Image 1 (cartoon, rainbow, N blue to C red):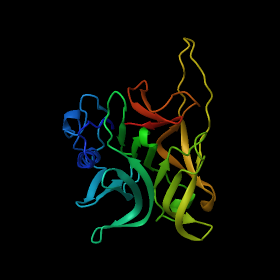
Image 2: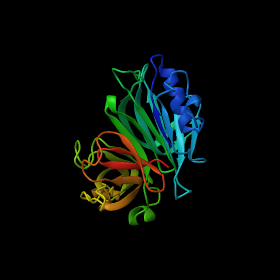
Image 3: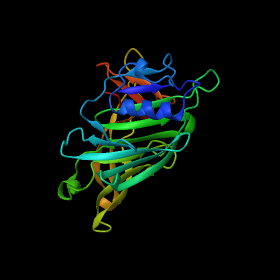
Image 4: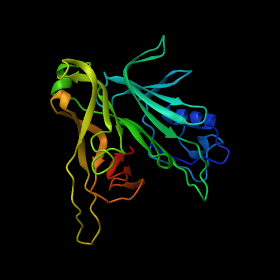
Length: 276
């Protein structure tokens, strides 16, 4: 499910916190389910919510569990942190201790998501993507394009099975953008550099498709699978679920499109992220 959230001129931090929480926990299916802080007229929802995947595990902090989309025995955790006015942090962890509200084997990302109003002058949009494969939040006005995604097993994680099957990815730093291959992190996975579990920085591997067209001169959207790999794990690659590499420059900015089965994708920096 993708919620293209537009803050209203009266949107407060409390509104933003409540709406993001309701979206993650499945309490929003139509725009009128959003708070009065949302511009419900201009907000849009695509797709359906993935049931039995996300749970809020702490009533005071915004901490959530996520069940892996194909490996049901793997559950990992993430937390959203807020300042007095904005969303400012995103942490992901291998596991969680409820008694002390502690993320265990975690890494964090500093970001900014601000509830500036959506109006004729400053069309601030906050895109919130919640699928069985990952969670992502985008706020182009604040240069925020960050998400967490399930990853597949490889020969290392099958043997060292405490390794996480979830990673964080900053889409500012991918092929052709920012600092390529600097935006991916697996907080806890086996490293052959240390012969122990460690936080791994991942390379972003995908085949760049070239532009083609049909006989009727329509552009062909070629979606290639994306893999994350770390030199510390011997370049063992793991499939990033729900993330695809597109042809360079095919779409400009953050857009949506759908395939022949009417399944939507969200695009950012030549990548497509599955909405359903």
